View 1 (tube, rainbow, N blue to C red):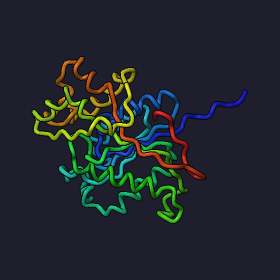
View 2 (view 1 turned 180 degrees about the horizontal axis):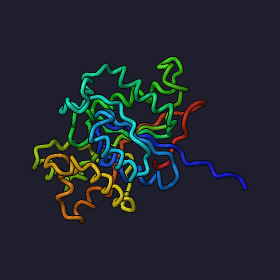
View 3 (view 1 turned 180 degrees about the vertical axis):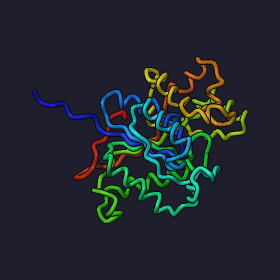
View 4 (view 1 turned 120 degrees about the horizontal axis):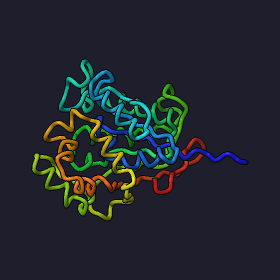
Amino acid sequence: MPSVPAPPAVLAVVAHPDDEALLAGGTLAMHAAAGAQVAVVTATWAPDSHRAEELAEALDILGAGGPRMLGHADHRVPRSAPGRARLCDAPLDEVVEGIVRHIREVRPAVVLTHDPYGQVTGHPDHRLTNRATLLAVAAAGLEHLYPDAGTPWQPGAVHMATHPHSALADLGPLLRRVGKSTLSVPDELVDLTRDVSPWAARKWAAIAAHRSEAARERPLPGVLGRLPEDVRHRIIATEYFMVSARATTGTAGATVSGA
């Protein structure tokens, strides 16, 4: 009996511990449940920090392997990576190469990351991660770029997590109440809308695993944790993406339909 090939791998590249669960926790859990390799690269915080421990727990809940941390400092928390530059101050080439290494190791069909706004709150680390990820995806398939970072591999698509205007009925007022931006996109720019209701409980458990953020007032895990369960479910049970697809040949990964 012929063997069934494993589903294509998925790699998320995010700025901070907790972003993986907030922006695409349902999608990551869905792919992991289908047997795909799922991995997450986190750009900030040191691997020996308390947030790395929380990240490891969240990734285990989602089925996304162990932490892959680039170890840059958070823009607003320099102590998050003692002795390292803040992500936004680090040489862009260094950040891109770090992401390329993980792309070539995981060999994903799809890379998930933040949208160009830095998602709804517009955090500068989110915006930088978007730019660095797009550059890394373009570079990963080219053998003469970062030749020491592994065998070239070209992902088939980048899915950028976003929020359409129509999705902010519940979330928008909550963010504005704690002084955060609400940077949404026109609905017609959303290429993929996914109902992740079957994985919403797992997604929320992964978000809540980031206990240090959930205990605070302004971070989104804390905002969500204070909501009635039905309102929180409405907010987290749908994920939205802008999709940038690439033609793939040779070392390329096949695109995942609806990934």
